[in-house]
Image (cartoon, rainbow, N blue to C red; front, top):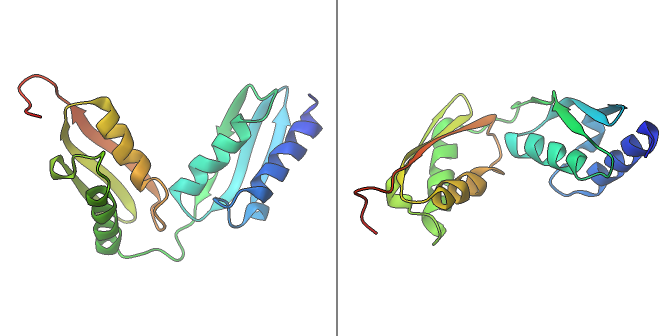
Length: 149
């Protein structure tokens, strides 16, 4: 697929994806199958989704995600933490009692110890789309020896 066609297909997919509320704020370029995304998005989840969309197009070899997260409408850190904890506590697949969340300047950090990698992955996926989050660090440790349940 030509570079022009790849860019056109990525642009169309960005326009049609509800996770990207302002696709016009994302610039897309292609060179020999290498895609570069530049511009601004409203949260870490949108940044992640845009790269995922670009990777889904046939012929794309690599995606350089240079999108900046613009938190103009940033939520208070305590609000983000409360919403994130509620999401984790509402998910039966997450051992929420073993995970804590810290938020500083819109950056969310997951901490704790779980028995399976799946538990860590589900917790990360649960908070991925939260509005007002500029980034996520997953510091959840997977420890199988000596853990109950």
